[in-house]
Length: 267
Ligand SMILES: Nc1ncnc2c1ncn2[C@@H]1O[C@H](COP(=O)(O)OP(=O)(O)OP(=O)(O)O)[C@@H](O)[C@H]1O
Image (cartoon, rainbow, N blue to C red):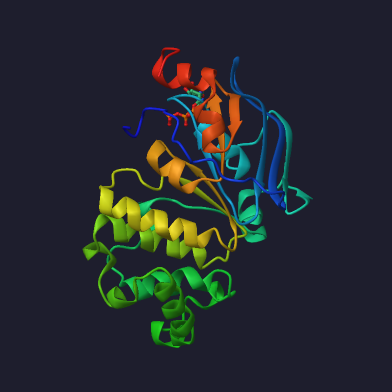
């Protein structure tokens, strides 16, 4: 199976046990002028699960991400985070409430070391941002926590390397680690495997699996091998609306999904 073909994977069905919803969207809609990019979208993201948002180009995945993180305001609908209505809440406040979005590799400071990158990220939740005028050495209190975080993502041996010198995959791991410094309850990842080779994909998939043991992960992902291996629940979008949802076995067996992906109704 190639990464873009949607085939049934025998034995890939996973039990979807009833669990706690931490992020939900109801009747989400977003218009751009006269064009409706997202319509009637309902999503429930569960604690300790990996949820994928997939669909062909232009399906509305990025728009849904921007709506959930409040970078875009919905035309209508309701978004709830940890039981609180965030439909009209500003993005910065939503992030402080625990909904954190990964900003790809560009979010890393390339000329700081790996450890310094994490220390900078740790300043935010620790209210140390007002201490920017202090010398970096004053931030040594953060080293223990930073090393703990780096160890948890397997970057402890690169702690003194410049971020710029890391491999592409490790840069992505570092970037995810900087988001973990905010201790998110829900982590949104936009194409975390984009541009990666097989070995790096395996490393980042392992990290995401680990991260999702204690928080919800919602990810846009084009690589269907990754989706089938990693994701507990999948929402398939097409032309801004939900085409199918369920575990991988369910959506991969859905005739509408096969047609959307293959442009045909046979395997
Ligand atoms: N700011 C905007 N103004 C007008 N149209 C927009 C805007 N943002 C997105 N769209 C349109 O909304 C539709 C959904 O776009 P979106 O980027 O959400 O899709 P996507 O599923 O993320 O696509 P891709 O996989 O190609 O990134 C597209 O037709 C796009 O052209």
